[in-house]
Image (cartoon, rainbow, N blue to C red; front, side, top):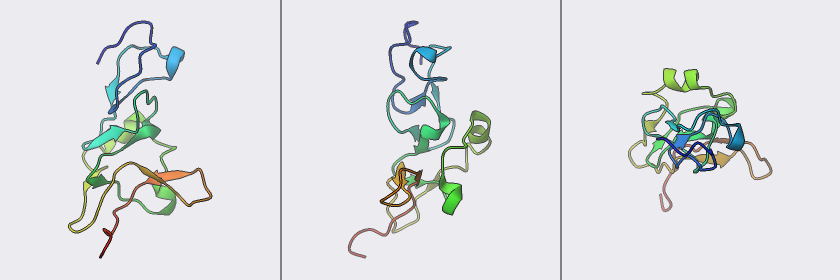
Length: 117
């Protein structure tokens, strides 16, 4: 999607810019490049902000759940396998969660057992 050359407009949710704000070198917004993926919010400018959408999750373990090392090439290489459908009987909220309540570190939200089970 193309936005004004002033680059003051944010890319819509589901896409990312090449760089934040006035540092943008292009007025184009691009998708994260992963099947069933989206960006966390409008104005995202990093592959770190690419997550699985509601109903999907990224299978990972401990330190492998962090998003701070994602690159365009890395995301494209995993395009069809990054986000998996939620297992039957589980709840997948997509997005990110805090590693623990005292940390600012985020990781991909993992499948949850629905309340009442």
